[in-house]
Image 1 (cartoon, one colour):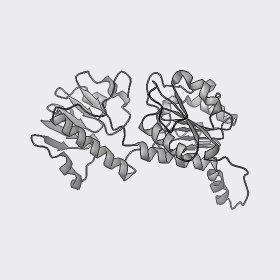
Image 2 (cartoon, rainbow, N blue to C red; image 1 turned 180 degrees about the vertical axis):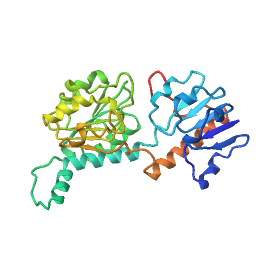
Image 3 (tube, rainbow, N blue to C red; image 1 turned 30 degrees about the vertical axis):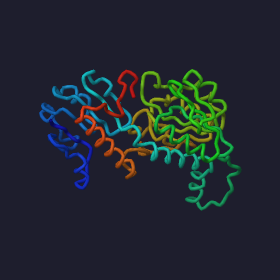
Image 4 (cartoon, rainbow, N blue to C red; image 1 turned 90 degrees about the horizontal axis):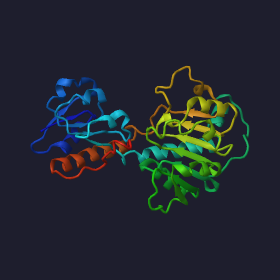
Length: 310
């Protein structure tokens, strides 16, 4: 049985994938050709769908990301698993940093520092007196909700279907309830996958449903926010601050108005990835555990519902 590992694995970690009867091939994404996939049953890591769809022996793809992009198009005969659960801690810490940076005026104070200006920018809000709405309650959204609850915020959640309400949420609703939650929010945090239902979920009307002066964070997929609508809303100074770790087009075009917009802060889709060692270690552990399950004919963890898109 042949497995192709695309995600970089340090030499001192390769022992994790030494299973009897398994032929492991390590390659980078750019090195892989259709010839490599002719007899490959397992792929660990992210390859283009256009390459995978032509792999005749492929039975299982394990992604190193939580998002699946166009992999939902893989045939029903190919199991698809993701790395959900590996990214929540690192990304939610990034979200917390973004909240505090905007809430406490740290960004404009840094701008003042560069100009040698000593000036009080006025009153600020506190987390403990804030209402937070987390749109998306997967690993990332839930991790952020727990952190904000621990700091004293009133936290509400929005998810596709309602399950039992966790203790760190004051209430939880579905997408049908979203518009009733937004006007009470001081902080709106998006950690949504990209699906037909989430594309431009936040159009101009919905952006203006958010309380004036609130904070908006997006770490899921950039397509959840209509870019032109966001530009218009921020030209009107509707929100106090917007932090985008993801944008509708990536890389964000150099001529995008978002780069120069007051109170819009951008990071280049880096809140997750492998920038935190803890994230990388978790991804490799997910690979190892699922590989053991597969070889023992056991159900895989982190299975993706291709129809739902996550």
